[in-house]
Amino acid sequence: MVPKFLLIGFILFNFLGYIRAGVTSSFIRSEWPSVDIPLDSDVFAIPSGYNAPEQVHITQGDYDGKAVIVIWVTPVEPGSNQVKYGKTEKKYDFTAQGTVKNYTFYNYTSGYIHECHINDLEYDTKYFYEIGEGESARSFWFQTPPKIDPNASYKFGIIGDLGQTYNSLSTLEHYIQSGAQTVLHVGDLSYADRYQYDVMGVRWDSYGRFVEKIQAYQPWIWTAGNHEIEYMPYMNEVVPFKQYLYRYPTPYAASESSNPLWYAVRRASAHIIALSSYSPFVKYTPQYQWLEAEFKKVDRKKTPWLIVIMHAPIYNSNSAHYMEGESLRAAFESWFVKYKVDVIFAGHVHAYERSYRISNIHYNITSGVSYPVPDKSAPVYITVGDGGNQEGLASRFNDPQPDYSAFREASYGHSTLEIMNKTHAFYHWNRNDDGKKVETDSFVLQNQYWNKSIRRRKLKKNYLHSTVPTRQLDNV
Ligand SMILES: [Fe+2]
Image (spheres, rainbow, N blue to C red):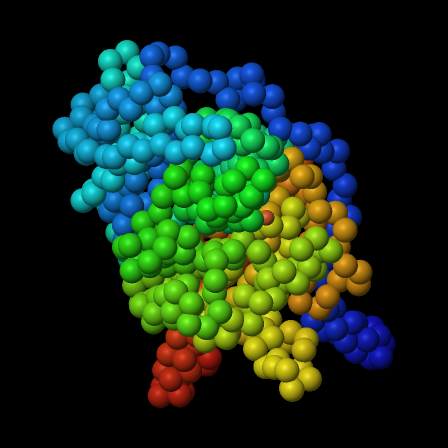
């Protein structure tokens, strides 16, 4: 027989533990050196053949997933702009015509960057495609998503701050094992800006070849980070995001955005909003006005899952980049709560962190309420800036761990979000444990819109029929 006071103490301990028990993982890994892979490595190999297409990558080309944008570079001359494609391997029934352009950055001149939009695709279909000419032609394939449907299942990967080091390679290899269908890339791609002068362009090229083995086969949905800005007055290069925008187009016009740096797409059962941390976002700016309109377009009956991606995290308890997301939080957090965003993914901090559902929307300059509080309508905030770039890990977390922080660890890795239906999704963070993929943080994510609806409907039904209420799971 357990004494009563011990039992009460145990319950109290667990209750207090539930509301405070953030975990700071003490796992320490022996990381690869934080240096870029040498340019002569096989991972950056130039494809054989004269003027062969390289750096092939694709992204979603429209609002609803029936179009794809194919981007590739030809190094010597423009060559063909055409993409041949079809549903049978090596039998291409259709062609699409693209455009070509190049740019200079200091004394570097880029290769010929081709951009081809393939429209009116069928949903849930495997397409084979070929680019290039003659013996230099190269072929790839991609799978279109299921049609927009509230119960469509789909598996997203989430990668941030990738770079082109041995740790980046480890992240990519582990991601391939995950079986995810599309990556949400939360910014900081090549880290070419860690170099100077002409080498910057060279490192954008090597990054393009580095990720081609995945990005040519599945669309990545990208957003820009600070390493994409490349504002370099000492080289007389002062147009922000110049190289990134030449190389990584987005379907921004399809979501009535005026700028490729912020946009939205719908894919399967998800509505994904990509924001730019480094573009104006305060009231009256184009990004602010666009986001206000885009949130009103979200239809949770068609796309139950509302996901936001951005670069700088809003809730971050690492000493690296602490509070950098505060101004964007002040501008947008009330909308994130009002529209019940399910989850917000960010990068920038080279570590992993997950929050509880919290908000700080009651704070204003006079309220004195300056600390975030539990809020069931708020998103879960996840920082996954741990792709593996040459700047290394951000291992100094603030101590003590704030109440809003549920789990944090300074290791490299990637996340997956496997949407099962309109009510539940499985989330995993996978640490790159020195060559092995290790699931480290995982939970069941309940949909913010449908679970509440189910609860309301059940309550109504129970009220009408006097049946016993069904207990609702409430994991996150
Ligand atoms: Fe960053």
